[in-house]
Amino acid sequence: MTFVLELEQLQHRYDEHAVLHGIDLRLPAGEFAALIGPNGSGKTTLLHCLAGIQRPSAGRVLIGGHDIVRAPLAAKQLLGFAVDPARLPPLLSGRECLRLFAGARGLGEIPASTLALAETLSLSPMLDRRIGQYSLGTRQKLAIALGLLGEPPLLVLDEPLNGLDPLSAYALKRHLQQLARERGTTVLLATHSLDVAERFITRAVLLMDGRLRREWQAAELDAIRADPQRSLEQSMVEALAG
Ligand SMILES: Nc1ncnc2c1ncn2[C@@H]1O[C@H](COP(=O)(O)OP(=O)(O)OP(=O)(O)O)[C@@H](O)[C@H]1O
Image (cartoon, rainbow, N blue to C red; front, side):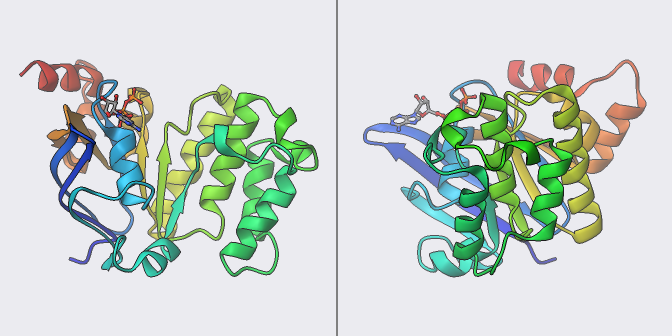
């Protein structure tokens, strides 16, 4: 099997503070995976390492076989990363920002798929306003639209449901699920919303204190969904306690 994303013994430290302690993870095409874990367990750090925002202290990140440190351009061409909404440029409009990202991705114009997603997320009416005037949820929607622009084979999103109203959150989950199922897109999202994880994903990965504590594959998630006595939340609590 070939993998879209491979983490090999990934380690990261901030100065003396070791945060990731040798993470191994492989995701094939079409996998919709949730990265779950307590506050401070290292989820954002892991996503930043795999997106090339933080340089790993040791180990490797391969995207489509390209090393994010040695061949960042080739690796990043395959990656869509939803940036932190707080870092969006306040003086640009959403449309200007989308055009900028489309240009950086080598696309002439904002793709129709992005405009359709903006419509689905009820972002369209805000696109010609300055980002500085956006609410938290609207910034989040724009960050997601930027991350998904061009529909690259690997999508990485950090807490994308933060600030989204229930309708938009549902639309986003369905959209990501469709991309994974119909286009073979690999999705990795960090979330504390275990209900999302349970209902939509094909794999869950639990991080604790910078180590992979437990993985749930599709068959086990199906079994959890089929049993009203079980939930991913309960299973996660047991894994953390054990
Ligand atoms: N820039 C930084 N400099 C120093 N330490 C950091 C930095 N960013 C994160 N950390 C530390 O790394 C550890 C992991 O943080 P990280 O943000 O990756 O966790 P997380 O699982 O995403 O947490 P949360 O669920 O609260 O978002 C924490 O102990 C945090 O204090």
